[in-house]
Image (cartoon, rainbow, N blue to C red):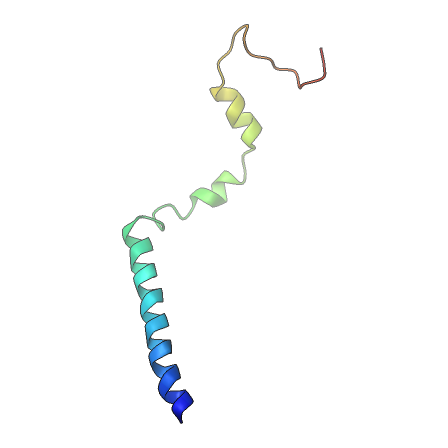
Length: 67
C-alpha cells in the first residue's frame, strides 16, 4: 500500500513533465514542418551543396588525392 502512495504522485509528476515538454515543443514550432523530412530524404546533399558553392579558380571539383 505504501508503494502505491509513492507511485501515484510519481506518475502524476512524470505525466506533468511530459505535458509541459509537449506544450513547449508545440509552442517552439517543432511540429510546423511535418513533410520537410519526408521530402528531404529524396534529395542528395551533394547535389544541393554543389549548387551553393562558389564557382571559380579557387574551387576544386576533384576529390583529394587526384590531380
